Length: 468
Image (cartoon, rainbow, N blue to C red):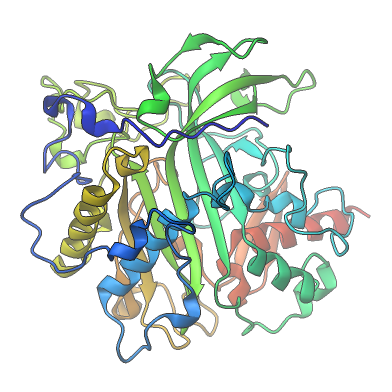
């Protein structure tokens, strides 16, 4: 696997007229109006290895002393650590590139991974990259883990290409699953509903758009983002060719094809457990050129929203057509805007995010990683406040008092069509109904259901058992 990641010539070298204004979009590169003291410590930007230190969740402040800023700082430090080289060797992979694919831990072929060493794939083996269908509060399709499949609500970028996704998990997550034998259906169904993931468990979801289609010689045959590696983290990967079959988008045809492409990273969910917060901190990051705020989109669409070459927003398109999937034309580009900048929350929450984004950007200089911004983060009061019905914190108005941070958090590349919900609407400890092929599988309530890697795999195992 050839991996390329630029560390120079960031978006900041574009003319200032091409940068989003402070109100368009919400992900402002530098907001001088932010009065918060939430900033990035200098030791995050050391020139010596390990560059940014890993944010150990065991060192997280106690519940009685923790502040809103602490959660956002944990998220940003983790993002920076993930984007730094895993060693001081020349050409070393970035930390996130060393993490495991969920399919290595939860194999679809039914073979036990108990003897498989982390990360469960070869050094030159790329992670699983797939297309993703729309999310629902009531169902979670098992193809979110393993492969793309038929379904509506697929995100198509402004180049006319579907957006691809990667799921990753770290060693703490891997070791916990193996120790508890959670790859086995009997273990999953008998586990205590109160069992939590250990501190420092981490799972990621990354979103990518095609920057260029490459030929057999590795040279670009069709370019969608000129000089993409100047403005995005890019990788050369093999992805499934997506087609419309019987009116539905799929890459699971009998004539399955793949193509070599240059991918540009446009989003990342960073989800991890820290001390006293087994519900995970749910943080998300986006590239600044993804989409504007909906509040900046004119109702008539007569005027453009800035001069930026948006990845997901159609220039001069009206507000009424935003975030809509055309079921009759599945491969039509979807115009996207951000419904709730920074995920909302109280003014201090928003000020902290703005201040931290500005602080990080000022210290990253011309790195391409300065083009990515914290959208927001969500968590609960901690100390056992686990979201979900059936004996756990319910998802109703009363429970909102237990939620903290960005209450209406969404990533425009991953929750495009469900921006009116928050992370805990889908990721909670309650009962889950999971669609596996044509069968609906009921996964009983338990804390581990916070991870859809666990929920979806249990549903898939149940469906396989029912067929036997």
